[in-house]
Length: 640
Image (cartoon, rainbow, N blue to C red; front, side, top):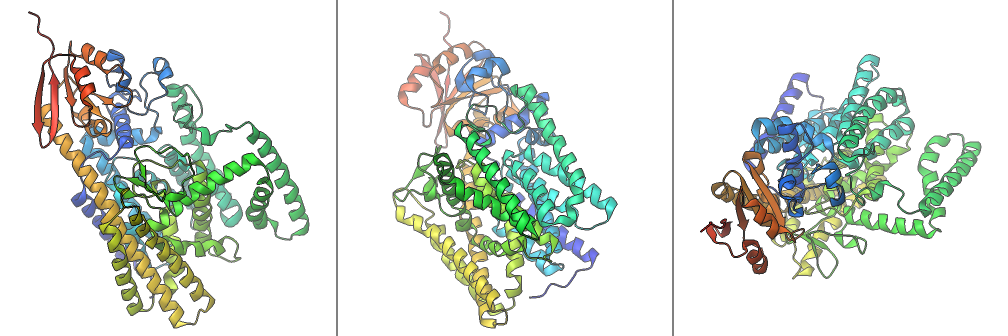
């Protein structure tokens, strides 16, 4: 397959077509319901910023003083009196989302992500054209990103992944690709600004603040001079985060949610780690002197070899052994299979089958290569990190994507309710571009590609029919089909590289790629997108019924996840929402206080009978049932 350069006007038409396709698909498939507790947190933060220009969430806590009203992300309860009911999610999502909420309400949050995803499609095409000029490769990249990158599911949501991904990709597009001094300087500054903003949307993007300078300084040294404007502009949003956190959380720490435990991965919580770090620094310094003295071109060897040698030596130390075991477990969990999650890792709202696999909503949570085996070909790009004369764009992407996937699990948790590794989404487009670039020379045999695609579709059908259940753990083995395809793609691609003139080896690699791409596409659309839309559809129907019943000036009590489903009501009317099942010991007293000036409703579904009786407190209730949902209004006592 060849890729002839397209004329600029024609290329722009193709860009518009792909962006239009993304917008059309998202608009057709959108289901405006809240997927998880995380989404309600971001929704309420955006509402507070849009309506009050503040991070203080108003949910009735000041008036009723009940912990059941603190179901969104807040500081630890002991600090609520000091700081108020403040949102502690990263601040820039609320700031960027506020205009959309102010103009369009709930729909604005969804369309912010849809527009972000569409811009990411365009960014992927631009980055692809830098790797391999020509419309064929750019279209393959755009189509693969749209269909098989895990990303489309998050374009249909409220949470910040699509916006974060768009900011990261925008930063990489703005990064200087040419040596025009004026344009390159402006591009580097814009790139740094966008990357800094991305950290304020998803804290894990702090990793890019280290990876980009390292890649520019060591791997693509021709771009080192642009690090000054990049770092300067990247620092501005980080300093802004520090100032915001000082005002809302009482700390200048920019990378924190404000709680006691949540930032443990960013701190030296174990006292022995200080000594460990000192030993690591001394050992690395000693090895660096030796390598510099006896090796003519030491910079890349130091970059790649010294951390490995230091780590091997430090593994003799028990604290490092514990850290390494936890890191390897999380690496396996996010990349390969959820059964590799380290023992004792907290899981909220999940179940585990007999094999240890994690399930959310009856669906096995998949590792990166289980969900998108087509990404495995990106591993072939490792050579770009040390081959002399390698194209700077390819080496730069490889220096971000490959170390990023290895290092990111060290600062990640297991994640919450989702069906794939959403914490890796910012890296996935980079992996996809590298994978497509590596396999491109083998995409010459149409029959092999067609047969491979057909095989991938057939192999995906069992998982579409049985995405997993706790009662049938054997179904979890179906997720391993993706791992087998990933291994087959990687092995056949390596073989094709070893015998570059072999049509058979090239055809086999092309067929393996087509199978992996077709399988990845089927899993994204047939499992992840379909199941998440199902969750959102149920949430949207519950919200619609609540809209028809809950009036202004109401307090609504709901069990666990149903409280989050109702949170969009707060965008439309004066409603407070309380969560039952967690901090509900004082809920009856809260009801007593609220009845003096508010309607009080309980969504009875899921609430234990004993708790319902305590909430009513012997008062009369008026029950309304709509489509299986039971809303009970607790009526105030009438004076005789």
